[in-house]
Length: 173
Image 1 (cartoon, helix red, strand yellow):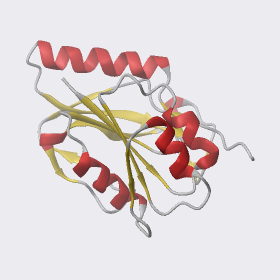
Image 2 (cartoon, one colour):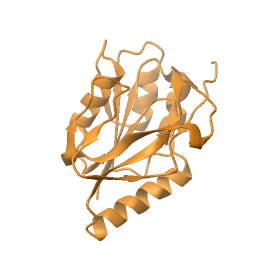
Image 3 (spheres, helix red, strand yellow):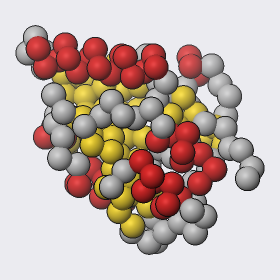
Image 4 (cartoon, one colour):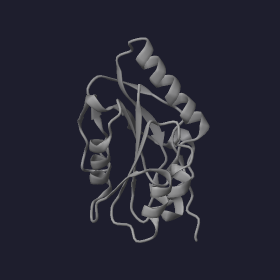
């Protein structure tokens, strides 16, 4: 399997570096910026050569553009205030290896996501987090929703990961 990670960004300099650190386990890292004026683009370029600038785009459109640019079999969507912890990284690698090696028909995985507003993640127990499809086979996506609160639809069965993306708390500069 191959894995692209797509991160959207809009004035996310306070959290973007934390988000992008530790994503070296993917085959391709794509950052799509919606017109930041706070240094987010420079931070993104420190981690990836695949940085796209689309001013005045909403987060759903930025995710859509990033997924279109992805060339890997699998795509993981991240928000700029999230980071992948070791638990989730290991869970992703195991799930994709097993899905690929044993012919498992899973087309995507949902994971718990923490509620957030802007660069602030709310501290909630993982059991209270909502589930969202964030890891999926690119070829199995029906369409990326333009409403950020609408869940992604994929063809085929979904698995569930428990690691979850860990919210990054905003740190004033």
